Image (cartoon, helix red, strand yellow):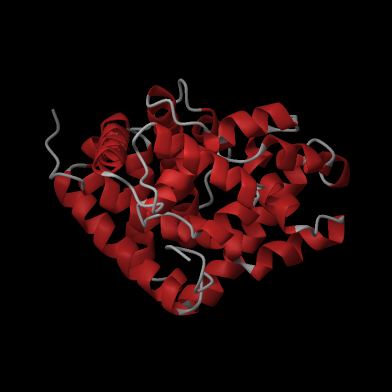
Amino acid sequence: MTSLPERAGRRCHNALNVLHSALYFSPALGRELAPYGIDDPHAINLATRSAPLGAVGAGTVTATFYNYSHSLVARFVPEVWDAASPETVLAARLRAVDATLRHLLGEETVASPQMAEAARLALRAAEGCTRSGRPLHSANADLPTPPLETAPHLALWHAATLLREHRGDGHIAALQHAELDALEAVVSHTASGRGMSPKWAMSTRGYNAQDWAAAQRRLTERGLLGDDGELTEQGTALRKHLEEETDRLDRRPYELLGAADVARLTELASDFARTAAEAGAFPADAFGKD
């Protein structure tokens, strides 16, 4: 049981996740890593998100990211650590976050009382996260929290990352229970109209059209996808169940914060997310169906 309104935690996460995810589309990230010879977009993405885990190999990254092609991951990991250590990548990541949020939100907003309030609330929620069975969250939780007093925007991004990876780790558990493999998870999410467009999903996750079509066939054989590529009633029900199960596994941070503060954090984060999106944080064709 939960004292929160239905989907309150999910709505809060979704707003915060916009701020977290904007980094991966930001030119600032490439500029920060280019001096170390990390300039391929795939290498930038893989190194940036996996750096909290340390200098791990391809197997660990594939397992924790879940929906990436192992062949793509193995092209860049662990060799990327020869170019820059995880500590170097993490420092570059934080500089890129700083530049990205200042660009998208403006100097006045990043230093505003509202930003500090949102950071305090998000950090408080993150205290409710659990480490066990959540490798990406736990690795990020080992990183120092940026100073709230002097860099509230960085503290908020750190908290958003903790909450995002906590939910993501739980979502992987739900996907495993539903017996959706890496690409089936991506294809079914895209078919729901909520994920990345197929073009972006294939490009960023390392799959081709043949891989995509094979996953569609497997989902069709299970009765989850129709011949038109759309979710069937059964498929829609499964995706709904997956989100609800993820909500259940992710409820503790938001229950700790409480309904009123969750609503306030959602309000603040939604305002920031809207500003970031309007400032061009994401390519116009990145999300939704092609």
